[in-house]
Length: 245
Ligand code: ADE
Image (cartoon, rainbow, N blue to C red; front, side, top):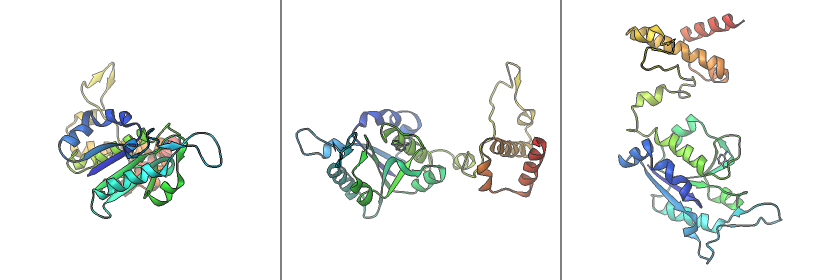
């Protein structure tokens, strides 16, 4: 996979991709990540990427010319129809794990980091395939949102982590994860549940499933509506509900 990030602040994105697991994915050749400075697609002396809004009002708007030129240049470097152009904006569709899985199938992502009060509407209507928001809050720009999206997508690429690990985790099957413990078995009087030390894999799997169900019920019961539940799961949920009432 190739990911191009179009931004006027490449420095913001330097850190997140030059450290830890994402850097390892780059080193392994699973993904190529390019920071593209929007100003390199300007032609005037001031390298102007934004301008005041027509009709008046507060703030600056990203101009269409450099964005169109940048995206067209980046798109031409892939085969026809092989790139997906995404704008990070609080007005976009809400990002979630399903979204991440879908993007992980793409060959070439071009992420445009919005800035200031917005981008010229013609960028939205004629350049961008999809708009993504990472949550109902407003950041100063799309860079940190793009970093979140890239992180969530790259860790799903084949070869990044054991497939089993990403399939078992929160949200994939619409349940939150069970609690985790590591050594020591007793810490400041707090004990690891004995079932985890039992070596009985059947019992451990059952305990984990029930803990996932319990945690999801307590924290995010909305997720249970989409979860695939076995008759045993349903029975267990009934037991917890009855205990509560
Ligand atoms: N840019 C500013 N706020 C944002 C958000 N919540 N999601 C994506 N891009 C943004």
